[in-house]
Amino acid sequence: MQRSKNDVWVGLFVLLGAAAILFLALKSANLLTLNFQSNYTVSGRFDNIGGLKRQAAVKSAGVVVGRVENVTFDDKTFQATVTMNIESRYQFPKDSSLKILTSGLLGEQYIGIEAGSEADNLANGDRIQATQSAVVLENLISQFLYNKAADGADKGGK
Amino acid sequence: MSFIANLGFAVRSYLAGLGLGARLFVRLVSEFGSNMRRFGLVRDQVHFLGNYSLAIIAVSGLFVGFVLSLQGYYTLQRYGSSEALGLLVALSLVRELGPVVSALLFAGRAGTSLTAEIGLMKAGEQLSAMDMMAVDPVRRILGPRFWGGIIALPLLSAVFSAVGILGGWMVGVLMIGVDAGSFWSQMQGGVDVWKDVGNGVVKSIVFGVTVTFVALLQGYEAQPTPEGVSRATTKTVVVASLAVLGLDFILTAMMFSI
Image (cartoon, rainbow over the protein chains, first blue to last red):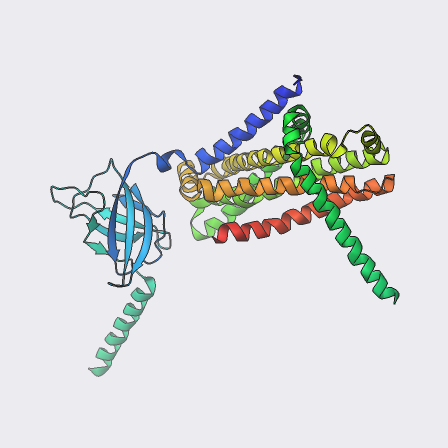
């Protein structure tokens, strides 16, 4: 095939397009930090997970240490089972506890993991026993209204 | 009676048009091998369709990014979540605006020139002359343009999205003063490589096929008169734009509902 001066320009164009795709993948979607660390999997059971989704962050002291891998419903215990991948470089004691928290008032939900005090660390496949469910706003409000009403009834009775 | 005959004629010519289009499409696809063996022809078309569209795509992307950032900030700051600006700009560009707007611009910038070129070749009987010399015009003229367009548009879309994100960063971070760290980290937390960037690329490939094919078909089937060529050029823009928008809805519904 013959060479032509277009080669250079087409080559540049293709390189530019490839660079743009690379930029999108690396800079905007952060491909590098996603997959190349080894993880271990732990799970926990929650009475209510609120709006927790796959890929939600697992944070300890505010730092992201892992991601939620899967959320399933267990029809034996009627609880939600959340499996999460935690980066291997972060180790937690076996009696650590899980909490479903919300970033900001209406932000997205994430799992907070609080370190316990046992000597042994969590291993791959372990289940964390101490869990605390998501705070469901509707329950809070109805509880609040119920308490108010009870207060009002007390005062009316006196 | 003449009403029924008109209806019948309309349906018949519509079906004939569909058949011609489908046959041309199959032939273009089947010319993949021979076109890739003579890659010089395809390369020249990538140069003509891609390099020359780069300026309009990049400038449009920059300004779309600017405007997205301004408008997004206006809405987001009402809810006190202006740090999600990066995520908003990146997702709208990568998933939707990048592929669609660059396909529309591509139809206007490159599709029209394809239609006019081929229509004029047909009007000047150059295509028939090639046929006489046993040179297949679909293989020699249409094929390289088809594959050139398919190569060029996804690259242009990626450039559009990337430049748009940079534009959004300029306005959001440099001008308005959104925190740079949360701008990028929210974006990186919310954009998925395969689901968002990958599907955007798939969309732009489909649009590349659509726009280039519509342009070639309109040129190839144009009436061989100056009037016919001008009508075909107009039709290219209308049909290609509508096809892109309609397909975009179908593709979005398919991809993001899963």
